[in-house]
Amino acid sequence: MASETLTSTAYIKHHLQNLTFGVHPDGSWGLARGAQEAREMGFWAIHLDTMFWSVFLGVVFLWLFRKAAKRATSDTPSGFLNFVEWVVEFIDDNVRGSFSGKNDMVAPLALTLFVWILLQNTMDLVPVDWIPLTTQKIAALFGADPHHVYMKVVPTTDPNATFGMSFAVFGLMLYYSLKIKGPLGFAAELTMQPFAAKNPALKMLFLPVNLFLEGIGLLSKPVSLSLRLFGNLFAGEMIFILIALLFSGGVILGLLGGGHGAPRTLRRTFQSHLKLQIRRKKWKQHCSTLPVRSCWAWPVSVWVSVLACWAHGSSKALPVSRSFCRCFAPSSLS
Image (tube, rainbow, N blue to C red; front, side, top):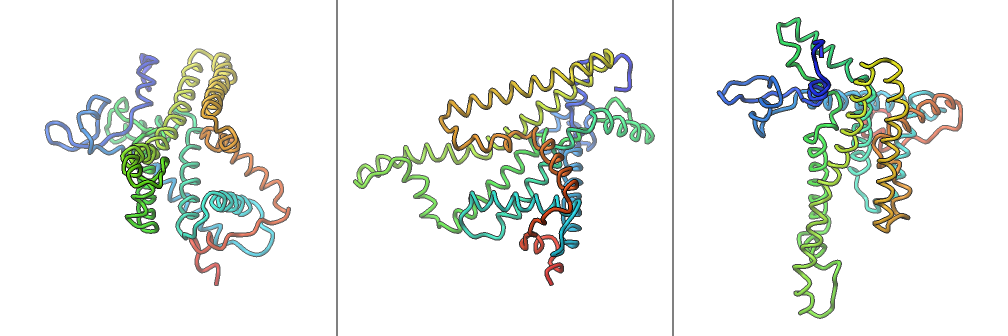
């Protein structure tokens, strides 16, 4: 990116390449100097930028929410504390509406995933060249070639991160299903529906069909969740990269691309998603969840909520969730 002869294609490829560390074909450890070397490192290569930003944003989330939990009082909250209480109430309402059982892990897990993924998605709002250029300049001070220094700042544009989160949740789902229902109950859930019969012969006949249908539905959950999150954020990243390229042709062209092209692309994406939901004949179930499922809308909606919370900090306080306080600051309940 520092070179004047850099083409648009090379610029895009550079922004889509992760900072990869692994074993080279000759047996030495080091950083990949391009996409080809990253592929040669194989499965056990590590994307250092994805790991760094994921852990960093997770620590930021824990620090902010623990700080808010320590400051929680029975008085009227204001500012950031009001926003945190709104997030906790939002997660609590969603969990109560979709989970009727009793488990102390579900709500904290939902809160962690929501805020963690939200922070990762919000990194897409940082101008695409700021952090990569800064990283290149720092690496150049230590003698590295800046053209082979990569930095992707949005962890959710890396399928390794989205698949990791989805498989972790999938593993917990299987664990608690077996723990609560038992092996026989879990097996019955996969083999006794959707086709059921009272006749034992028909039950045995339907068993492989039910197992096939339910097995596909079960295994598709982590794949669909991870690919949906990755696809939405990858598309958003590509839009911002293309807008940055338009600015190379002038400010007016860049503003036209950012003000017209991106909203039109997002609008078409939303319309396609809407038509898909209608075709599935589940409009009533999905209509209320479409804005939440559209990952690119999360940063906008949350930051609008932040401004609203600060503007109305003196309004009626939202009750603080005691489970939230126990999770982040047990001493605040004493």
